[in-house]
Amino acid sequence: MGLEKRDDPPDVLFPVPAYQQNYFGSVSNFGLFFQKFNRYQWLKKAQGIDLKAQHSWNNNKRGRDRTDYEWSILENQTAHAVVMKNAGAMLEKFHEQQIACLESFSELEAGILEISARSATHLLTGIGESTPTEVGMVFHRNMGIPYMPASSLKGAIRYAYCINFAQANPEKVSKGMIEESDVPGLRELFGSSDAKKAFRGGFAFMDCCADQVPTLKKDIMNPHFGKYYQNSHERGPEEIESPVPIKFLVVEKGLTYRFRGFFLNPEARKFEELLIQAIKTALTVLGIGAKTAVGYGRFDNIEVTTDSIIKSIRDKKRLEQECRIMAAQEKKKADEQARRDALEEKKKAEQEARKQQIAEQKEAEEQALKSAIDNAPEGIEKDLLLFQKNPQEQMAVDLYDTYLNSLSTLNEKQRDLAIQLDGYLKKLWSKKTKKNKLKRHAHIKKLLKT
Image 1 (cartoon, one colour):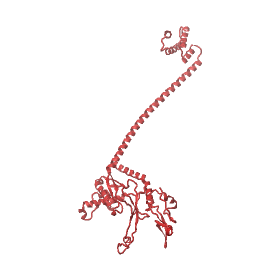
Image 2 (cartoon, helix red, strand yellow; image 1 turned 90 degrees about the horizontal axis):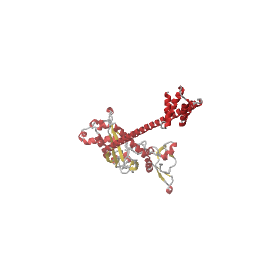
Image 3 (cartoon, rainbow, N blue to C red; image 1 turned 90 degrees about the vertical axis):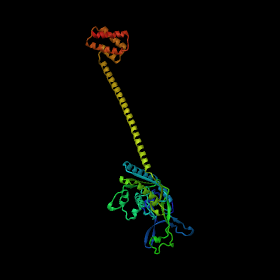
Image 4 (tube, rainbow, N blue to C red; image 1 turned 180 degrees about the vertical axis):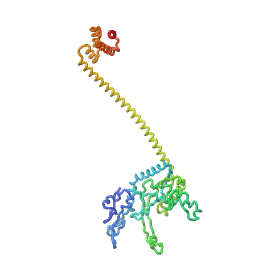
């Protein structure tokens, strides 16, 4: 988002190096622009050259041809406020980080605190910050939006804590000087301001931002007695001076802010209720920021939302625990399925290996049988090998008949061949019951016994 286009006077100097001038129209951090990227002009004086802020100029003509220009951060605030909305995503991350911090301290059993409040009036913080507009404002370094620093909140709430004590104990205050140790919880919560008795406070304040990117508005203060305020008017304030309007930026009202912090020790947490009352007093009675005497920095709709944030933390933990349980269950199922798949793959691999082994063994046996047939002499032994290679019923019968017709007695070699033949016949005729086959088989058995 660039800045609005405007006519510029000649001889304008940037307070940044020349190579950075191209970034002037594309600055997305409004705080950086507010403090750094402002226009200046060299103005010659009788005694030399001086550098002053450039707010208005003209085209050096008169009459109808004269054109007056005005440019400043205040006059162009609308365009820059649009630029500031670039911080929306960072603001959301800012709140997430603070809640995560509270969550971590909640896990350590340290007390946490969150209070929500809506700004009932305009807010002005950091009025003393250095800026080309003379009336400053404090902006978050990274987001470039107005915020309330933790240190400022701590000081304002500490003051409110003392005010509450004084109102509740007027008799003690009326007696004279009150020491820090006389105010219960003051040193425990905020620490000691005495350098000789340094004591760390037991409550840590956090920077405060609105729930959404704030809108800036132009406001004005119009002092009538400038010389009197500068101690240069001898007769005091008189209605003879001309008012000098001073424009400045303020944060629009109606935004919800989150005041967060956490306790560092159990001693400080004992004074939690007193701390909450001090925060409410600071927000509603005293005000936060600058110009509180004229009504700035007031809040309403104050609500202690610690329970809700604790509930959200617990819900988040429960959800995370459920997610972890579901993830563990899913992992267990996946591991079991992977184990079954691995066993199945192993079984298939073993089956394939067995098949491969059987095939190789069969191939080796066939090779050995083929080699034996090729090397065997003609006769009953070779016929028996051929029968082994290609067993057929008729060949077995022919072998059997060969034994009956040519053998009356069996030598050792013939007996071994008959035993082999008997085994082949068992396999060949195991499920057949033809009589002639059974007779032949029985005859071989009788022959083997002789």
